[in-house]
Length: 105
Length: 262
Image 1: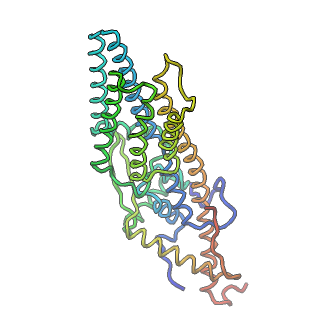
Image 2: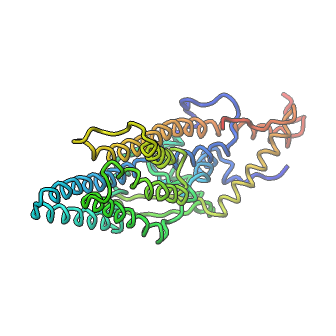
Image 3: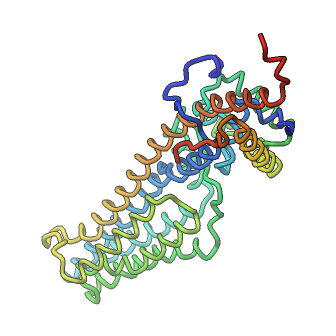
């Protein structure tokens, strides 16, 4: 069994990174409302993802209001892709064979 | 509140492929249309102002009123310059950005992947769009083009221009409604479909299709973005549940059978 990337495997961080994988960029507010995390939790997870080099941060001002934007890095996208493949392998180990998700499309 | 410990509204009961979240995130981002609504208002303003000025120019020309004729030509020039400045200036871009962020409020900001910056040739075509309509208005003013053919004349440039913009910006399906319906409207007019307003309202032959089809496309995109956001939240919050069960399978596979015995 391969070791999963624990930075990504944490459910909240997987949600965040998966969301960012479909986007060019998203701000803190969007991630907050979509993931349903608290500000503190989200901030902490973003910090970990940034330290792992999986997201990049861009801080700007809209008028006088600070605006923080996050983008998944190529390293983050590669790590996420690898993680998805590993998860698929794990699912296939489940009793009954294919545990592959067939979620809504 | 950690969402892991709280009931997630609308969480799906079946397993979710995390990649589906990325797909719906992209669909949502491509359907955020408020920034287009702001720009659409400006395009409509431009066409309406030019149309009014053209009507004024035409009647002034017929009546030989040199004062109003000069004034309406000047009005068209001012509108042209104002729109060109707004389209090209940093101030215009920042205004659209600020209004968009304000409108979405707590929903936040998400930008679709794969959008390329608008190249110089497309910006030039945008300027050409204004110049083309200005030329159309002049042709109407001098009686070289009948007002009733202004919409097909406009569609000749606007339809391919909008198509190029949509392809370049990788917008969602909704965006195609605008050029498609605008082009079909022009063809229908050429084939004699009764899609005309009576003489005092002839300018609406141009303004209503621009207003109507543009608004229709933008509203369709906005409605779709509401659905995509709902779906996205539902899927995102379901990913954790699926992941936890995958983790359980991982642990079962790694653990010796004796450790699982009571």
